[in-house]
Image (tube, rainbow over all chains, first blue to last red):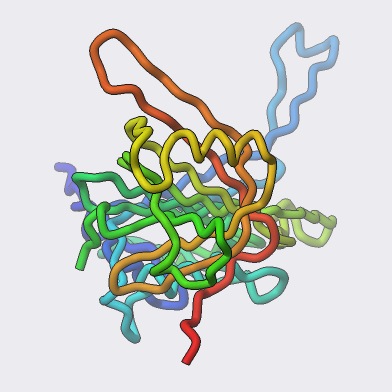
Length: 136
Length: 140
């Protein structure tokens, strides 16, 4: 019998801190492929994996008051967003209760905020892994 | 604690007062969007074994202001069109109640209007930051 994992039991963390106001964490692992097709393949393309592009997207409600030793609030996130060079490389973990934890380094490739007249303001942050991912 | 959308404001400072309280919001505004996109460079050596190394070299920062067209407010539709056609840079502030405020200079890169038979006419204005996005620190 399947044991589904509630979404709130999965957490993406930067420097062991979750993002304030978080509502959703998305992980994408896209394979980089190379193809070959010889005459002897008779039209059946051979595909092999040469590596992976690993990205995370964190979405949430903007929160400017909950920053702490375990939480990055909106202003903390923007500080990281604007970093360049070696300072922009951030350690991450992606934890699932009772499952494996993914860890490694990443950079922030996109940050956006949206605020309208009637709803709570929201943010979206895109992270791209630099280097290898460890599953433990 | 979540921030209501109406507590965030993109403000223009055409007189370069340097004070967010003297900067103006755009009349009829309904939505302000901020996007910070990293410019990246990649490297991949044989020893990386397929794990691409990614570095951040800079950022492209844009704002999008959306609203209902208003020709009577303080900084209204006609002012936006004047700004667009001038091509001049304009100072801005991006403020959040209870949070940090950011400032810098931007140029308007796109302006559009939409008007149909049944709804209020709307505008969309796109701004791109020229130079750095700076944390605003009030003078003592």
